[in-house]
Length: 458
Image (cartoon, rainbow, N blue to C red; front, side, top):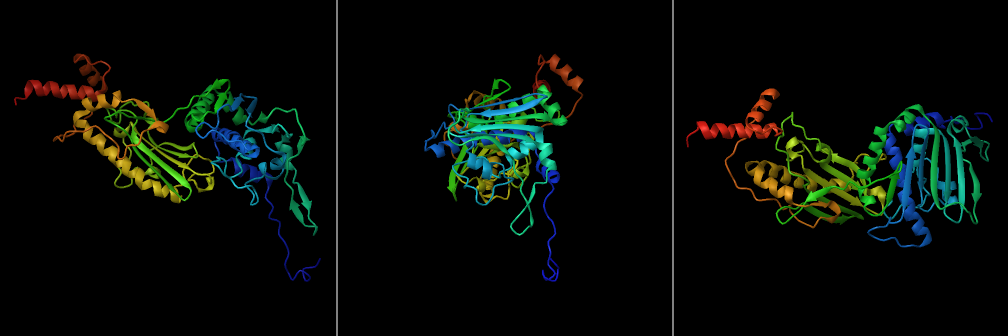
């Protein structure tokens, strides 16, 4: 057809390249986050199956009796769940789309999946050969995908006007719509792993990392009944805890706005350290700070940055003196698009209006507790006993205390003494004082007390 007939208007091909699309989809996602995305799908499947079948899940322990197993080594990755499976129409229309289409069913009832890219991103990241089986108990299907073959197949068709259109799709096999003997649930196995992925899966350190990340980032979900097994090892939740007694208790604030429940808890998880110098060894310092949780999925852990208010006036920047501080802000909504998480679920969307609503309250709680760490110095030994003897209570069991209940401190005229000496000299002084194994801070206090008692007349 001539350009004159088209009034000088023609079309330029803007179809995406599959290779480019896959590269961009997977380049900024960590392997552990890919695994967690697949785990998210298994969790969401539990609620979806209950809604399809008209079943009510227990409000406090909705995941009781449900199990997800993961295994991996240098040759394969496998995730298998018993969460209810994927209906065939969902697989055909939505599950394998790159992003949620406009006509997709609305996300609801506290789902974790949000953008519709997690499963595809994970399988493209890991390896070339994908085998998937899914069954609802009434219908089932299989998917066998050779990623490299799919990548090089342009899958371009023609529409009614003889124009090129993309027809990207995956072939489903063994489709059974009326009765199946395939076990309920979904399994995804990936073979022909890419070399960097194979090396990571073969490394025992990576296995430990996966277990730790699930224990921490899935703590709230595990505590609600889900069983997760990684290479044969069941995962126990690592839940944020706070010291709570008649003398000490965390701050707690709860409100609901615009369909989002905001729950803020902040307090002392453990006694602040005696030695806060730059050379001090505090091996557990990585667990303290702010945690951001969206629909029970931890998206930010132990944050000490400006994202959660540190270093924004009047809150001081993080310092080892604040080790022992713990803050948890939980956002819960039936509409997950409202929550302050990014696509990787590994970062907070700080401009989100609900996060902005919570941030000033978080900062106020932080400031109260950082001020407390300054005041307690004069009576550190007495107060430390109160902090240490107070039971550790999981954040989900914290009794409301607004504002935080903190041990009373006497107002004294005190100053801080800090100086640097050779480690060998400090160790020699510690030995002479019978304090081998004590912190440099304790040795410094003892040397001052020794001098004060012998050389200063009062």
